[in-house]
Amino acid sequence: MKIKLDGVAETLLITLNARAKDYKSSKSVLHDKKSFEIASQLDYDFKKFDTAWASYYGVLARAYIMDEEVKKFIEKYPDCIIVSIGCGLDTRFERVDNGKITWYNLDLPEVIENRKLLFKENDRVKNISKSVFENDWTKEVVTDGKELLIVSEGVFMYFDENEVKKILEILVNNFTKFELHLDLLYKGTVKFSKEHDTLKKMDNVVFKWGVKDGSEVVKLEPKLKQIGLINFTKKMGKILPFSKKIFIPIMWIVNNRLGMYTYNK
Image (cartoon, rainbow, N blue to C red):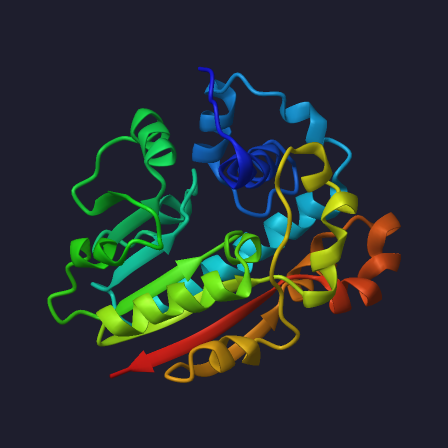
């Protein structure tokens, strides 16, 4: 199956490739069979990412930690509602589903169309085919008083500060209560898009925004309260091959981190 994605939308294939490649490994971190099945169906040059070891282990560590935090939320609220902003071809629902949660995938129309071709229908999974900058996408999320978790992985670093602020405003203006988990780029990495091991292999894709400790999110939207920050090197350091562990100290500085926030109107 040929897949045609341009710009930022194409970056979803970086993460898909890492999860699929991991499934074939004897030391698999995610055991993500669905990602392997999807990647196997696509006519795309995934081999161009073969030398990008830092992104490979970084994606796995990020996905693992974000999965664990989502699972903690689900344990507390078994029938919760979860929204994935910029879902791409993400398979987190398949990895964390407890049989009770309701999941909303939000992404651009061309991405959602590809999802529909590659994922089976599920009564508890809803697709929202809209831009995150459209206010009315929030109206499609039905919470019925249930706890709401909003997650976003590999997305916010491609927006500039004003765009991030706009998204945060949409969230607090349209939901009365939620927990927010954001994958955040280190601010020092923003200017190195052309040197990044996977981004340099793509056209018209650059990093635009990053943080130091996640407090920058609250500065953009003071109605949010920061409740946590996890550096993905916490897991990455454990899964790196021995020959690469020399890079762990620098990874603690430049790696992405998970920012966690709450909002209660």
